[in-house]
Image 1 (cartoon, rainbow, N blue to C red):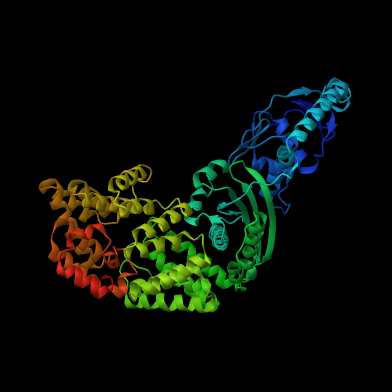
Image 2: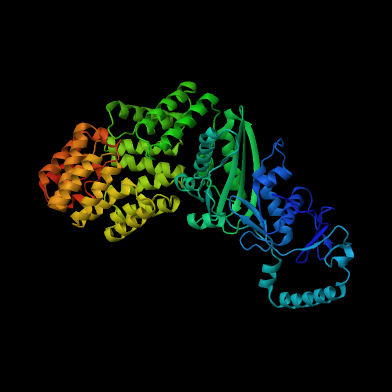
Length: 630
């Protein structure tokens, strides 16, 4: 950017900046703006109506060799300028924020050259006395009127003279922490720290904290903070950075009132890698203090200081989380295999690292699980809870073990409710409780938990459509799924959901089309072609029957274990014998099926696709053996 020749005095509104002296005046009175805030203003005034990028500001004001949290320092400088100028990010009169790029000075300027004297500039140093008589008269009038109002209205007096308070924060979103390392491969580290901070904040009883799966979509986004706050329906937003140097880590965090983009608080933390979880624990508690979250005595008793972790174990664990998060995003089971290897490395490096055991359990959920997978999940979960009895996410897996593996439905619900007490803002826990309640016939309670989960994880659109489906609102579920597919047409799970919704309504042609599309997206183009051919030659029911054959082929060839989906398709077609054949197969292998994403056998009584089987004696006998009979 080519800078113009520096002017001595620049006037805008009632303000005048003396660029040579580094001074700012308001109505002739000098303002307390010096150092970095004035340098930022100087650069903006030198390039009016132009975007001054964050990088240009950094190069000018914070040299490369300066060890500083640049983002935090810049935000503080801009916040200070706006406070002095009476400006705001939401409705700027002077400084406009260009999201994720920089800033622009938008007011009209009157520029006076190097030879100008202060007397030539009406709002500069010597201008204050000219308007003094009028100002005194106006001030006296205001004081008299205000005095009369306050004398007449005690309540108004309290409102006007009462201490101003910061915006109240009831809900919070933590945006992905920015990696300040020069190594882009360190993204997994900053992502892991984001996850840890969200997990810790979710334990704050009164605070609504948005799930990581919903906030990660804003990584490197160009959207403004007010827009993000509106989309996530939150009051507060936490932004920050992670900088790693050898075995030292620095994390900065700042709290912003989302709707107004008003900066509320910021701090920087630096510790050894061994104490990284204690560091983020401190960040979470400082944020809670700033927004005055009231912790119950139970919550306080559960919040223990995290134990140190060996750097090698932490490194392996974060690599494992990175690969596990990639599963299902264009990557296959090999990502889970890599994740499992890293989690085992973390356990080997630090056998008392509870998070690594939970990660190992997560990585052994599979499309075609083995007895060994089930054993690893159960043993790793129990070990994680031995090391940390207050580990909410591990409690969720234990709830799965009891509910789906042991068919101890009461014990499973008790575990998930215990997890909820440990982490009240954990969307996964609320979703799990929703499923348990729905499968055991308490649909009203279930839908209430689903709504809470949706508020905490607004990006989980699959839950949105499933909730409508479970509530019997098929048309609304279909409409929402079709709308979501407009922006993500290759979401195989949404296409499969639409297949179920259409099939339940008897719309076999549409159901076959969605089934064919889901097969294609799940990596079976040949099976998709056969369904498409059956539909074209013999109609919708033939297409669905071919889809059932393809699912059977998946099971036989061990592409995936999906007896629940297979049975549901045959039930819709009215082929009860084939439906019960696969339900019995699911019953036989129930100790492994809880590790898959198939329609669970435990949903037999509540899944609408099985409605046609309810009058069959085999259905009631199966419910009795499962433990769901009333």
